Image (cartoon, rainbow, N blue to C red; front, top):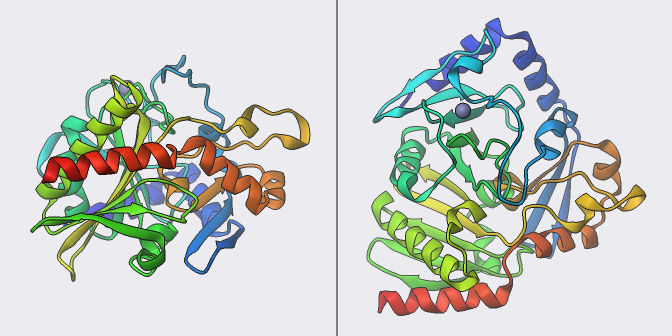
Amino acid sequence: MTSHRPFFERQLAVWPLARQNYESQRQAQFRDMWFGSHCRIRLICLPARIGSSSARITAKGEVDRPCFLCSHRLPPEQQALPLPGTEDFHLLVNPFPVFPQHYTIPAVCHRPQALLSELDLMFSLAREMDDLVVFYNGGRCGASAPDHQHFQAGSKGFMPLQSDYPAWKDQGSRLLLQTVESRVYVLKDMLRTGWLIESSTGAAAVRQIRSLIGLFGQQVGEDSPDSLVNLLVWYDREQEGFAALLFPRRQHRPSCFYAQGAQQRITSPASVEMSGYYIFPRNSDYEQISPEELARIYTEVCLSEKDIEAISLKLRGLMQ
Ligand SMILES: [Zn+2]
């Protein structure tokens, strides 16, 4: 285990801004929206997230501002915790939390966001920090710093697809394929499209995810498909197994983000929203959003069921 918990406490003790934001996070309003008896979306209102949700990022995943994850630009209170098994990444407390414990795990050196070369590391971090969910947002689907390689990690027990797992699986997924070390499921009737990968070993899950991302790129004619995925990974020590959720995306933001007046919703769905923990920085959006609007947002930003089916069939073909 890493010593992230005592590190977290030490950071809060010396950093008033982070302490205040964690206090606000604890007091945030939330409500649940149910779709059928198995699909729960938790809506949460967090005004401190306005910067992230409305960040100016181009369709190519480019930003026009100094990088806030580079070590020399961190606030004076912020410290970095070295991580076991890697000298390339370190752990930072996220001062704009959506979980009671929320970390950013940036590369020590400045380089653009990429996933395929770092999949093994994500799984080893998830095993090391098994009280957290480790997640990745592609540069064109939710990362607020697509210019600097990073993961995030947040407390277990808050994102419904993790906290309600495996209860939702019966009605919310179907088994696509099974190997000695892994099982791949297609999500169904969950508003979102994507895959659940279960595995006793990180290496087996990494192989399936790598294949799925490659097939996704072929399906949509995309050279860097890992910039268009959200991935979440966690480890269950009692079950001695990993679970991962992979969401391929067709759009960064839904059309309502760009609408005017009452139709506008400030939202940038990323891994956290994909796993059913839906953050609205504006109280009016949190209060007014309807089940129909939420379903439309997911439909617009997720890959179509037709494409998911085509990729799934190809994956099964690869395994035979
Ligand atoms: Zn940087």
